[in-house]
Image (tube, rainbow, N blue to C red; front, top):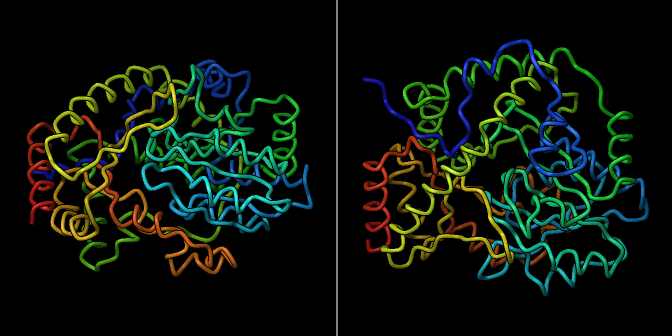
Length: 406
């Protein structure tokens, strides 16, 4: 009997007909129409897209070299900033939302600030208005990190368009995948032309990388099912946890080298065909989330993270839960992370607490980010996959109740 493994996020499963080598390859046009934007620009990953964005903005404002990011975000963001020759500054989080702290953000902004990067973590819609306000005060830009929020809406439009530039990811862990891929959007036509010009100057085709990513996409299509996912995800997770390596278990052990190349024609065709099913997939995920959130309300001390931006409608690849304290979070994860209940961590630590990445931050490691560290020590991610059955969700509720009361 195969071990049934729940993926950490509710990604859209590919179908074999998605993999046909012919058909429409204009994924840019398809995504632009789906998002309701004039144009999108494809890159080979969300991280590469961020690097193109940063280099474009630095060309416009070469005297500015600081990029303000949430202290609790993907280490890849800090890696991208460092590889662009810029300095990351870490901003603490609000006590009651996954948004950057208003007071600290105001203090970090200066004539050295190139950009502020608010993050729509796990499909939840951040309130970008504060970042916009302080960015405009000092002449900086806003890049919305919507890597995990493709399809989320705010004030009637796609997230990513309140700021100057928005970034989505098409990685294997996101709702729509070309195995790796990134998407850039921008409100201003001149800025869109600048992004495209930077792409043409700095990004080229790589046969080696495209063959590798194509093979990985085929493998992903083959194993992204409950009965086979254990081979690619469940078994490595158990090995990492057996070694008490939570960084590897959370998927935060990134290589310092960030590939940058074009996204190949076949993978674009796969994306076009899968995109046709994405709206239905997101609606079903939202319906599941509503039912599961109602049941989670019965566990005292467990907070479901919701959208804080006004008139926002996020996506639900995961449910983000804030546990009462670190003890209950750690007890839950040690007992059940590898139990097939869809548990994971958004990130293992705040950026400055990773020994591997802290040297990239320079003076940013001195920034006081205690509230962000508290978030990092209490936050849990629960897969909203359809493969997390009612029986497994019942078991998860019991595990949560035990962790809170134990």
